[in-house]
Image (cartoon, rainbow, N blue to C red; front, top):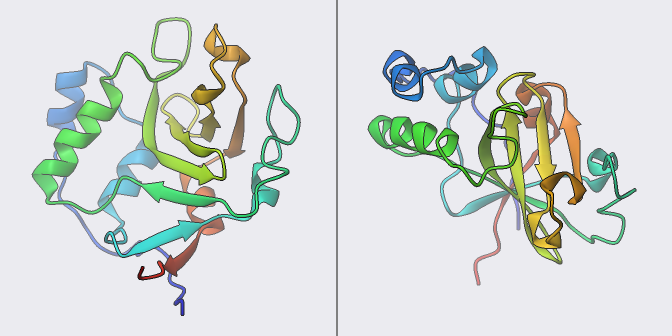
Length: 170
């Protein structure tokens, strides 16, 4: 049995973004700040689902999700504020996140998409505000050769695409 619910955009979380930006030495996009200050997230007993029709725009591999039966979304979620602040800093401060060198925009790891093949990285572009994905398990070098695509122009648009489902209790 499943119940549907959207993320709560009303809660106010008091996250010290000034401290985080000082540590990172750059500004965090206003949409990501809003995402973390105005949301509550599912606990571990819930998962999000996204319709594959929203994931058809791979920039280099055609429809990467065409054969996927279901696509689940795992967002880095609800924790005490201090842990969220540390997670935000850590998720920006990873050398292995694609596009995090001087040549590309800085990306923040939001979580994962998951289909029959496994987990696929889900990212927020701190320069443009877009939500995108990249399947590094494909193993291409350079990273631009991996399947990847833009899901939405804003994080709020992305959240509206999610279905909030209670996970099966196995």
